[in-house]
Every structure is written in structure tokens, then in C-alpha cells.
Amino acid sequence: MHQNTWAWLAATVAALFFVGGTSLTAAAKTYTQHGNALANYNVAHYKTVNNRNLFVPRYSFTVGGTTLTSTKGTKVGFKTDILLPDQIGWQNPQSLVMDRTGRTMYVLSTHHNDRGFIAKYNLAALRKLGATSAALAQADKDRVNHALTAKDKAILKNVKVGPDFACGHGQSLSRNPKNGQLWFVGATAIHSNVQQVSTKTLKPVKRINFMLKNTVPMGENLTFDKHGNAYFYTYSNGGWAPKGTIKIYQGKIHSKSVKFHLIMQGLRHNPGTKNQSLAYNTKRNRLYFISDGSISSVPVSKLAHLKARDVEATNLNGKREFEGLQFTSNGTGYLLTNWPAQIMKTTRAF
Image (tube, rainbow, N blue to C red):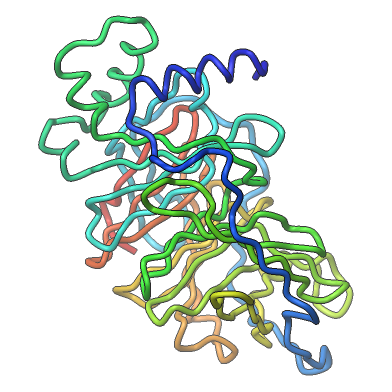
């Protein structure tokens, strides 16, 4: 997007939505951790579980569609719940966060030069207004076309758009259910960082710089379990772990530092070409590995001791881009997909 276009969008958004009250230029408090953040491990002790291979190769995305159904593996279904704004500046959602009740939702969207913004949705109020299906997207379209109705204005008052900031790829925004904090991975190179985002101002307020070790970059995904443990995963490029193996890392993000360790058992077969996201389901205590058209999951309680039967996997039709997955406390799943940007709700829990 052209810089002038973005400046116009930012001004328009600020005028129409209520943005956080602190300065947009205030820097996040930064801590730099010394030494490796990744615990030592012996590669000779690493093993993999030979899970069922439901790998989905990269495909050309199909525009449109309101349902997704399983074609192989665990029976799963999704149906369009809410179409998100898709006008200028909104077209590239990367990650989704919901609170445990499903009353509040955060979507991080990117635009250019690894920058983006977070939109906070009061879903409880939007549902009362009937802003499900296409109503929210239509309200934003009317905004762009200077044709706002009274209902449009009521709907848009329940969407808060945060400031523009450097967010990297943006696909890792996650909520720690232990303390309610929002975090994302700001850099996935050897020299990495994680950043905390204010739920009020929707901008980074803390940054922790670290290095896992000089041969291990940070993954482009992040999630937390109910105990506050943090997780990310990567695909192996080969070497001491077979190529394509899912390597799972567990750790803690503390107030000024992070610490991770490698789970010494991986999944031999990953779900798809690109590791789009990582999610956690409190009700089932499972981690979900999301790729386009394919999702695999494992029980947290059996990490490092998985059997093939413990790994669930599903392939879905529709050829959509899968951006993120979230679960409310009752196990209802919400999938963020693109083309067009929408939230799809499970019709069959998994």
C-alpha cells in the first residue's frame, strides 16, 4: 500500500473509531536478555512419533465460501460467523485472539514493511446488534463510501482500532489465560524478541530481546496453556531431526526474560506446507498446529510421550488461507480465514 494511502486510512480510522489514549510514538519498555534462552539438550535423545500423514501441499486460494468440511481424518466443520472489514488497509489479517468467553476478539492485520495494527471487537455488543454474517463488513464498506447509516455507526462503535506499529509477520498474537496478557513474536531470526500489547491502547508496551541459541531462530507462532506455559513450533529442515518434523518448544515468558526448552519428541508429519498458527483448547487441553487446509492436534499432558493414536488430524475443503484458530472455554472453535477475511465457527467441535 502506498504510504500516502496509509496516512489517509489512519486519519480516517482515527476519526471514526475510538483509539487508545496514550501517545502513538511512545516506545515500549525494552529488556535485553543475556545468554541463551533455550535450555541445552542432547540431539541423540530426540525422537519422533510416526503420526498419520495428512500433509496438504500449498495450493492456490479460492475466494468466497461460507462452509468448510473435513475430507480426511477427524470430522470437523466450520461455518461463516462474521465477515470482517475488508476495505483498504484491512485485507491481510494474520492472527486471532479471543477471550475465554468469546465476548471480546482481537485481530492483528498487516499492510506493508512488516507493520500492522490490532482491531478489538466487542463481540457481545455486536451480536446484540445483529452484526453477524455480513453486517460488520457492510458497515465498513459504507464508511469507505461515505454512506454510513445509524446502524452502521452503532456497529462501528464496537470496533476499536489501535495504532500502526512494527509487528513482523504478525501471525503470532496470543493471549495468556493465566494473566490475560497479549503477546506476539516481533522477530523470528536468531536475534528474536517477544512483545506485550496493551489490551487498552492496542500497542506494544514491553519488548524482551533474546536469543534462543545461535543456531535456533524463534518460530513464527505462539500460544499459551491454562497454566501460563508458552509454546511455539517449527518445521525441521533436516539434520538430526527428519525434514518436515514438527519441533515443539515449551517455556515461560517472564516480566523481563524468557526461557524455553525443546520437547524431546516431535511429530514426524506436519499438516501442511506453511505453519500458519498455533492454538490451545482449554476444554480438551490440546495444542493445535494450523496449516492451510489442514490441522493437527496433540494432548499437552502427553507431550514427549505421544503415541500415534494421540495425534488427531483433519484435512478441510475450500482451499482457504487459514490464519488463526481460537477456542472459548466451552470448546467452541473460531477459525480466521482470508479471501474474504472472516471468522468461521465450528459446527462440529474437535
